[in-house]
Length: 100
Image (tube, rainbow, N blue to C red; front, side, top):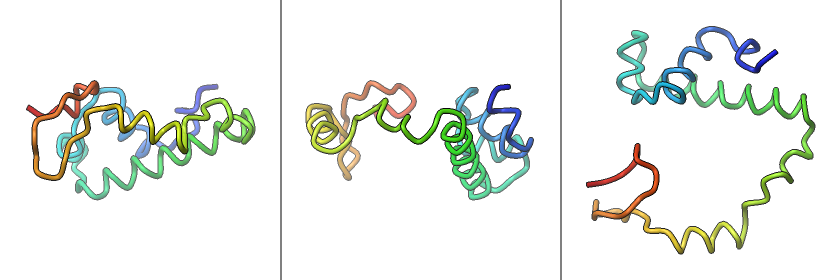
């Protein structure tokens, strides 16, 4: 059984619209007649439920499968063009978050 079967419909729907359909928080809220804060809360809690389900299924040792953290993560972050706090144009690889 896939993990989506373990989530209630209210969490599953938000995750599907935000993560799969790539709707914005505002678009998801409008589609489901929710507040944006409620969409954010359901998305955060839903991700936590999926994470817990995965840990139950494959164990907490799975964290070691993706050791991208610490100094290695800092080194990678410094090598990328990241946005500053003044809204300057920066090259991003994630098209959903690109600034133009």
